[in-house]
Image (cartoon, rainbow, N blue to C red):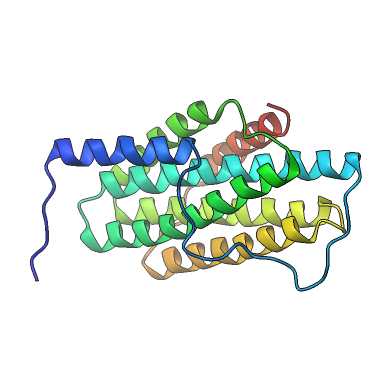
Length: 213
């Protein structure tokens, strides 16, 4: 079996195509949307608004995940690491499709700043990817652990009756934990505390803004 080698132009076109599909929410999930086994009750206006805002934040996180993994896969020369990033990106594609679907069901819109979030995350992913295997994997570990904590906070804040959103967020949290564990087992380095702090502050700005815009 031969491995196909892509030209720089092919890879650029692939990156552009993936970005457009991420930003237009046309990525298709490979897994069914998680759902609760219990019947859901109707949400009132306040609950629907809260769920819509929280799921918009989660959707932004998945847009950023697509950019990060795409950039890290593009930046590395390690074929094994590239495949690991691509596998994780596949699960993140499911998350993006699920959150996009849930936003439509709630009558909520995606963040108007998604192109900005994607571009910024892609640039950060390129830097992390070029920093070498241990640092790139360390960046994945820190990112996914922060996302896992963020999703846990959403499980606490989502209306108790919004079983569908809660099922989606719960599965996303389990997947993110798996991505962090896989990166740790693959040789991730622990990032220095200034880098971890900067990532947390950037995450707070993004999530705080996406809640409303």
